[in-house]
Length: 313
Figure 1 (cartoon, rainbow, N blue to C red):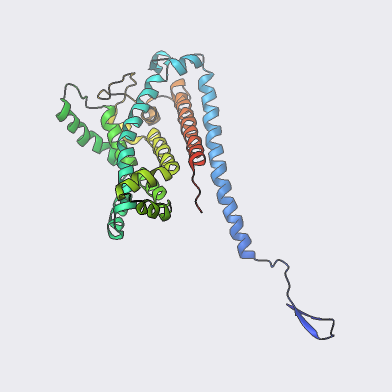
Figure 2: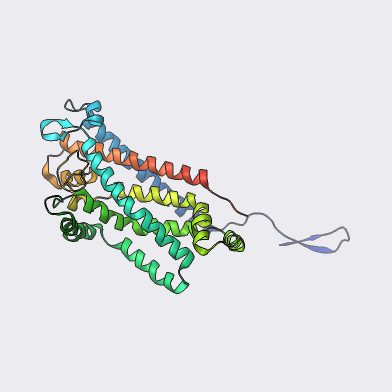
């Protein structure tokens, strides 16, 4: 603020509107930019490594790209690299997981958002977060020592093998349940209360309001939660490595053992094959397939949110 003389000749106070230098704010802005740049360059680095190593795999004389995409046998020891058995078991476990997580997650979210009191919500939400914090290796042994014996006692030991994709998929559904429930509950809670009050004013019950008004209004968020949960299921590693089996097999029977993409990557990464062999390089090609799959799912999720997003005033 300075002093200047006005038309009357009397001194008047003037305000300096020029931008003041704030070194601390500039430092924080720089740190935030560096953090964002690190995450972006890390992603770029991962993609570059995957592509470089995948080129080595696809450049090998034993590998044919058509056989890789459509072949039904994955036996690297004899030079057969058909991805369909690994992809099929990955999709089977992920589908079973979503069949468990989607309805349960939606019901949990509806209860927390529409029915639970603040006290009950304060108890249940931390419990769900505890489920999300359990290491996946624990879930893997849970599938192997609890879920598999349970399935064998129900359907018979001659039908359910010790290692099977059903028990892995069911436990994966329990694993991603907190993620789906939390994201869906956030979407339901974001629906304006005026919609609920209008529904009640027209004579609708709480159940009718929840299922016919709130859930459709939050469809974009629910769809995004489903896609994110599916991406999480496809990328899950330890549960399928411990419970699904360690041999690639093209089968539609969930009670048989079958190795998934991530399970194969874990097994080969354990040092069973030599470095820079075609077997070893194959895990990067499979990793690239997983990356592209989850990237496409994330793009679809963003399009769903954008397409069905409701804006209320």
